[in-house]
Amino acid sequence: MEQIVFGIGITALAGALATVAGSAEDTESNIGSQGDPNSQVQLAPQMGFVHRIFNKAVAGEPPAYGLWCALGAGLAWAFLAMQINAVLAIVLGSLLAVFVQGIYATTAYLGRTASLSKFGQPVYVDILKSMTTVAMAHAFVAIFCTVTICYLINVALGHPFPLPLLGFIWGITLGAAGSATGNPYYGKERQYQNQKFGAGVPISASGNIVRYAEAGERNSLDNGFFTAKFGGPASGLCFGLIVFLELWRTIVFDKISPGIGAIVVGILIILIFTVIDRYIEVWARKNYGPYTAPVKEAAP
Amino acid sequence: MTAVAAKPAAGSAMNPTAMVVGVVLLIILLVIAAVVSPGLGLMALIGVIIGGVLIGFGVHFVPVGGAPAAMGQAPGIATGVAMLAAGAGLAGLFGGAWAASQGFAIAIITGGIGGGMMMAITCMMVNFVYVFGMGIPAASGKVAKDPITGDTQPEYKSQGTEGHGLPFVSFVGGVTGGILGGAGGTLIYLELLNLYQATLPTLMNASAAQVLPIAVSVAGTFAIGMFLVNAVLTAYNITGTIEGPHDPKFKRWPRAIVASAVASALCGLVAILIVITI
Image (tube, rainbow over all chains, first blue to last red; front, side, top):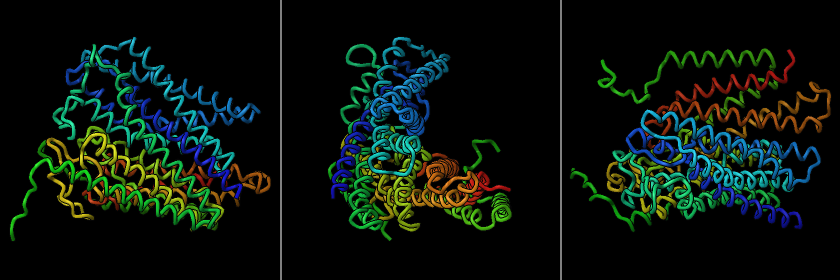
């Protein structure tokens, strides 16, 4: 019993850390403009819309976070092997991984923006100086939380994978959850704030991203400020649920009924989310209604 | 014929020569494994190939919209195919590896359910953001009616887009893809783990307990690597985006099965050869 309670405590802590990690990951990727919406940041100058948005699609978010979290976890593992205190080892590992992220961010911004010089897009040094550090700070939170989750899973819950491998796995999952949930909110809702609410961006509007803020030109910090209110927490909820439910079903139900318990609960969780998803879909159809009148089928 | 006049082949046409070459390559690789390591190695390779094929087939189900989905211009999840599939499959592998001591079948099913859970949560959150964050209902661009629910789609597509969000069939596809990917990844891991646990003690002149961490790490790394190989191959097959099992691109899966089998066999052979003394 004591073991189960201990496991539940670790699970709850890991879930909470994952929520923070997901939220920080999405905000970092929006401030740095990484992931799919960055295609519009790259496209805008080519369509004649010069802007002051950061531009660092180092890679897709999942492989990028796979690298940074594996790096953080690997270095933490090495420090642990040197008998350094666990908290300090994780902090140092994450810190070194963040420097790598910062290097990638800087070279990506300079390289990608310089490639747009023929379209008149300048490289803004003040953007580089003010935004890289903010993106790095958010990345540190995301990496630190993820590496801590991996440490807890490895040491406290006894998962057989070593720390760097767990860092890679959960880093990729973090990036996948964060980009899947957060990207549409940044891509559609923020970059195309000038388009109609409640509709997708018409393909003809591609590249015409919003470039002006309440005062002066919009920059990526404004974007992070905006998406941190919905896209970030939603990404955090997504990753938090994934980590929490994955651990919870194993920790609690494997003890009650080894093997089968976790499987049955997993299937039930999938069914519950299927029902919730269907409810959301039907709710939207009922409350928002169709854009055009339904096409009547020809009478036979 | 100019490029403009050329009809898009939609990539669904099978190339019989390429398929035959693929099958021949597969047989050659299997024969090499049978010669080098007739018992354990060959069995491991067959498991790896089945796992790789499961991953390759599973990725076709995952609804991925890429960059257009991030602007609400196309349905699907707004990220890359390989990345999302890897995220789901690796979450499954995590669960499967944890359950490895409970038996082969339990571990594979646990891995599959882990991948399915990750996709169910992610797909639900995608619709959550579309509906409550952006006020956009789900609509498919490829079919007039959802094949599962029968909901009509075209009138819910906003002007100038190919659809948005995840219709129910895409959600089911995502979960199915996650289950297949998680199970496939776990199968590869288990097969390689069994092989390494049996061969490493003699190779390294150490006890089974001493080689266990190495066996787990190397098997896990190879499983992740093979996952990415198969996911990327499939991403090429569906040219980056797919709505799910109702998408016409889904019909291209036989090609990916052959490609995944050959690629998994080659990678699997390398994974086997590192512990076989010839």
